[in-house]
Length: 162
Image: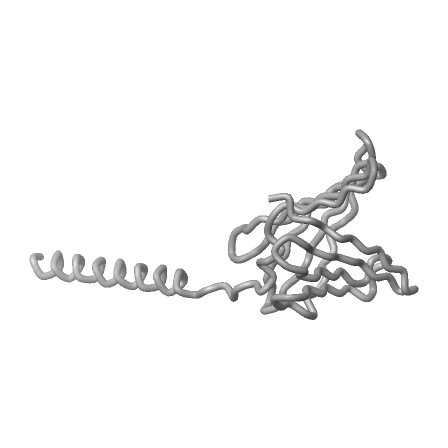
């Protein structure tokens, strides 16, 4: 009986050590660093009564969370929530667009260029846009543009506000 008790305690200790090792191993697995962290912060464009703004913050597991809106006077034209996240080794830009007509389904733009100077996310089969670009223009300047299939391009030049 005494040996059975000692054996049971020994097995519980081994199981506990294995669980701790598994837990530590999972903590040691690091999410690859996102090279576009320079996008973090509050960015704004103001032209007359029109204000466009983007805010980017770090999320869990290395992802970035973005919130964007455009308003004219007191009317909000659109709101967009965005996640830049890692999936199967690739970075994705996943916007959730909300306008006066309602909420559009999420789509995943795949990162085809992700570095310290330029972010490019692409989804060729999407109606518009097909590509989303962010260009690092220094500590207080961020340029962005979106491209469509027909060569349509919309450009944004943001200034850091925080």
